[in-house]
Image 1: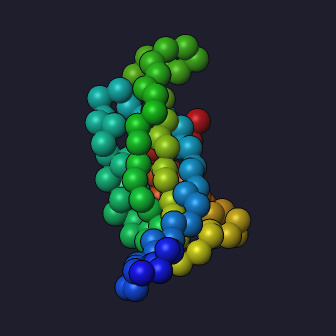
Image 2: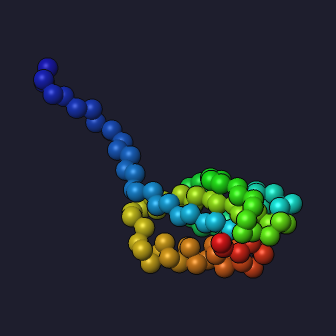
Image 3: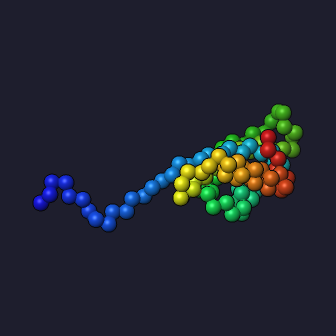
Length: 106
C-alpha cells in the first residue's frame, strides 16, 4: 500500500472571485423593495449570483413620499475573473434599466 495514495476521478471545483456592486436607489415609499430586484433579475446578466437588500432609509433629505433602498449585487464569472470593463458594463446596464423604470440612483 502506498503511504500517500490518491483517488482518481477527483473533481476539483474552482471558484473564481465574487465581485460586489452596491446600488442605492430612491423610490416611492409605497413601492415594494422587491421591484428593483425583479428588474435586475430580469436583465439576464449571466454573472448574477444573488441580490441582497442592505438598507431602507426614510427621512431627511429625502422627500416625505420617497425612501432610499440599497442593494448589494454579487457577480461571478464561472469561467474566470470578471474584468473591470465587464463590471463597468454590467453596472451601466443596471443603472440605465433602473432609471428607465423610475428608480434613480442616490
